[in-house]
Image (tube, rainbow, N blue to C red; front, side, top):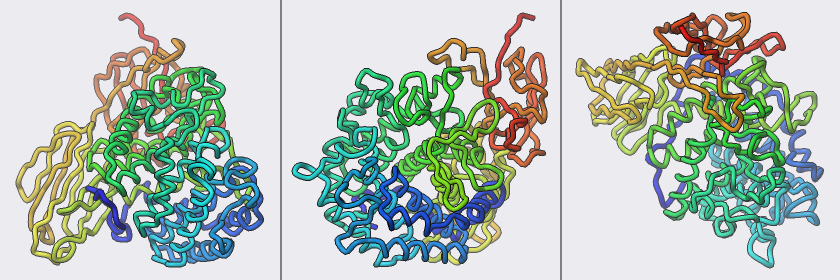
Length: 606
């Protein structure tokens, strides 16, 4: 790929990465129960028969992207056969002029439901994911022709402006095609991709107001496109983040500093205003009440305990928050983006996955039971497929790409999961094995298991922002680390070299953030490092029984006995609380399996 701006971090060849434990097992479960079971031919039928039904073309691309990522990691040959068959099928449906759409030509470039460009976006993303693992020139040609065809339809007058397309969000949803356009341009300098991308950046994605200018002017994400009527709000969370991910691609391809700074501002605002303890955001109240209920920015961070909210934290939002974080991590090399990714991975993504591996919760809850509610779903030959079940696997299979990453002079270790990875370096390669009990304990041992180079290389260790008293011991030398940075260790690595990492993980009590409704004030939540902790009725008769003190005097962390990451015994001034990680809370997925993340408080005097 050719970018004007080089990434500071990039993924290793993930076939040389192996994770052990819960994340790996969940990834393989989804591979078997969703990616290998869904009928990709039936998903291509939406293109085959030009059904022009709302957003149906997104499914093929979302699942193809996840399948290709999963194959890169697992090297599963059965999955590869499914992928190849599906790609051949879709390619056979493209017209000679480049048209690959679920809508008939006379209704393009919008379609009867407004989702034509949105669906083309995902077809592109799926095909480009396959090109990455195959280098199949037929696929690259198909993508170029598709973009040339689209560029001939969409742009400045007399073409159709991008802001005149879409279904409810004044062009934001269509403009998110910017991301795969930049992926394609980086591969082959396709001029039509850059021409259409420039149009999207120039008009700012949104008919009501220039979205990028709005952020530069200090506007909050939930207010973008605000016309004064909350029921007509258009601050749709994951489509908006996808546009900013595309803007970062535009920056990487062009070096446009204004694009970069705008995306940084946007991330800061979303993190500060919208991202909850679960690592997701968006809701159906209290600020925005428009279409896509439960999926819009709503100052969600401050309204996490607001009882007016029914639906929140769509899994699609989680996935695109993770993608935005990952893009900024690769561009900047800053730990805070890896920290945010870890929270989403351990909580929102793994917690959303049903135990059978065939369903990702559409709207995860903080309290109650696992949520079967969906906004958008189709039955594909007996398989209930929602947008979140199609998107969720991408968030999960980002883990091996995040685990360890390449740098200019070596690699970084981001996750302290049990596993192994091999790093190409000057003169050869070095293999490392990681043994740890993370996230239960802040301790890991990293050993060199193979090396065929005599050149020095730097291994950068992520020091999480929450970590206290971080130390690494390498060959007898004690090296302190600073929270929120990477700790470099440079040496000529030899087989048998060992690094011991140790750090304290804090248990923190969070008071309710006091949002728009005072009825949500008297709650608290506990986190242990990146892990959100919960009460569960397997350990507590009533998870929503108020606790009389939030002052923690002691705590003990131990292995989970319900299939999760950990269990915590937390002693407050007045009672002992048994808490488990969010991912395993309520994981029996029944009306009798109840949990509480935000726990009611009833402070009383001594």
